[in-house]
Every structure is written in C-alpha cells, then in structure tokens.
Length: 164
Image (cartoon, rainbow, N blue to C red; front, side, top):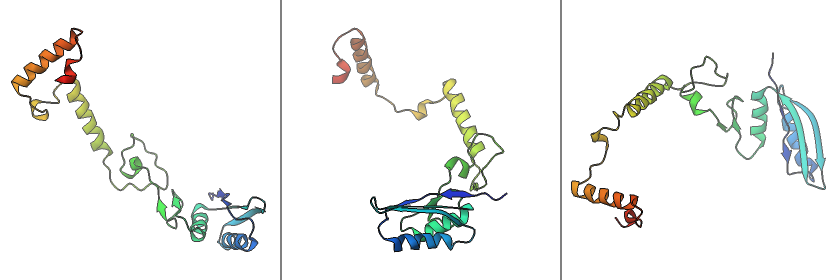
C-alpha cells in the first residue's frame, strides 16, 4: 500500500496569477504528485494549492519551490533539514521493539543510560552518594558559626542567615 500525504499550503500571493501558475506547475510537474485543487483570493492576496502524493516527492516539490528551509521527518532527503527525536536517534527509548520507519539509530546508549540512572538512584537512596569526596569541605570554625546562626533563626529571631 502506497502512503500518501496531502499538502494544503496557503501562500501570500493571490493577485499575480503568473506566480500562482508557476507554483501550481511545479507541483503538477512532480512525478506521482497530483494537484487536487487551486484557489486564489485577490481581495486577501492569498492562494491555496491542494496536492497529494507519496511523502518523498511531495517534500521534494515543496523544497524546490520554497525560498525558506523545509524540515522533514520521514519525508526523504530532499528537505533542507531533518527532525529525529533524540531518544530514537540514540536508542534511549524505553524498551520497545517499535521504531518508526524513518528512524535510524546512530548509537545504542539506552541500556547504558538506564543502568547509570539506576545505579545513581540506588546510591542516593542508600545515602552512599554523595560521599565526602563529592562534596565541598567547610572550615570547622565556619561550620560552628553557621550552626549557631541556624539555631538562632530556628528560635524565631530575625533572619540571621541573611547576615551570615
């Protein structure tokens, strides 16, 4: 079964039929792409072309004609840029056998990431992390002064920590 996409671009051009004709001709000249409808409104300077076809030639037709970049996701290499979700690109999705057709996995780091997060969570829960080598030291005199300030603040005094 052939997949089709329908495009209904709305152009800011409705007063110059020659420009709209050129846009429509570009679409109509693209193999496997069918121009289904064309309307123009001179009062609002708008035109709408409706066309359909397989994703790759449709994206190619649009990209050839537009002066702004096109970004595709599963629409073929003719687009100016591509979108690929980072989780798919690096295989860091939850365990699943499903991946859309357009996904190419450039690295398989999902299992390593899950193992790292699980190890981190285990150490945090058991209070093994952070260990003293992962914290910043404080001078004993500064710690004593800080503890006095905390106690004074806890007793309802003004915010002595702001001055500390």
